Amino acid sequence: MQVLAAVWSFIQNQILGMKWLSSVVYSVLNALGLDMNTRVGGVIHFFVYDLAKIFLLLSVLIFVISYVQSYFPPERTKKIVGRSHGIWANILAALLGTVTPFCSCSSIPLFIGFTNAGLPVGVTFSFLISSPLVDLGSLVLLMSIFGLRVAVMYVVIGVLLAVVGGTLIEAFGMDKHVYSFVKDTKAADIDSPSLTVADRLIFARDQVRDIVHRVGRYVVIGVAIGAVIHNVIPATWISSILGRKNSGAVILATLVGVPIYGDIFGSIPVAESLFAKGAGLGTVLSFMMAVTALSLPSMVMLSKVVKPKLLVLFIAIVTGGIMVVGYIFNALQAVLI
Image 1 (cartoon, helix red, strand yellow):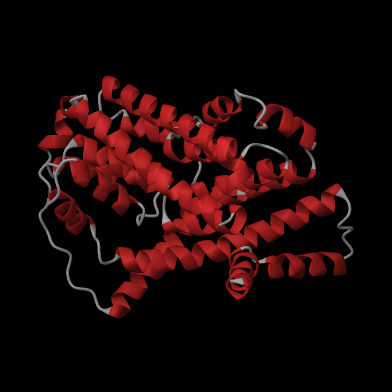
Image 2 (cartoon, helix red, strand yellow):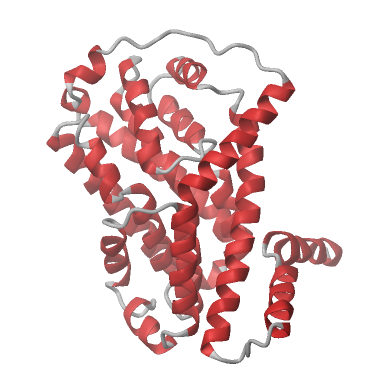
């Protein structure tokens, strides 16, 4: 057991957490004459190290995920989900969402494709919730910061939230609240051609380039904010506002996160810094979930394809679910960390 613990510690700290990279960055900045004991030095070290770590992990993860995803093009995915019925279809849609590394805005075109292919609206919403909220990349990045138990529990609860959300939307009979042009559009029934290994590798490479370009600015902004929080803002401020003793912290973090447009990879460094300064685990995870699942631009896009009643119900279900998740994680923080 001690050997396994040592091996896992090495994996988490040196491979996922890249502590070696932190030491390298520290040495380079120190050699350049930067005093690492100052706030400016701390901000620059955090920024350079976290930025390099996230982009390295992100590139590798997207490449692997995209290679796997090449076996599940949209038409095939729709056919797979279409074979299931009831809650099993919601579960399958939520699980398929975990292998699509998209932000919420990017998921909406696939949501439209699922809907005009005839899939129930509740099933498409399970996919829409899961896709930006939970993916294999976020699992690895969360694991590198918060540990295996927190990362796995986050993914499990995220999938559960997607399943419950889609099931409730279906139970309320919301199919009629999707605009008719979405359903009336004829879906192309085209099978993707067989791809060679070389084709899949090229596809994965192109996906890395496209997704890193798309989310890069949010990662940079998130890391910059995280660096300032980590090295400038007093811990007492964060702890008093977002600490577990503040019963309204989860609600505040969720409501603050909703209007922000970002990606889970950009919100993780902010969550990491807030947690290090004393914010509750559930509070920072609620912030992350709200940013990725309920960003204002994605809600504007969604409002063009669903009617107000369905949009409000979706926001209410996801917001309420995120808050419940936050309180659960805060209650279990001592056990998980």
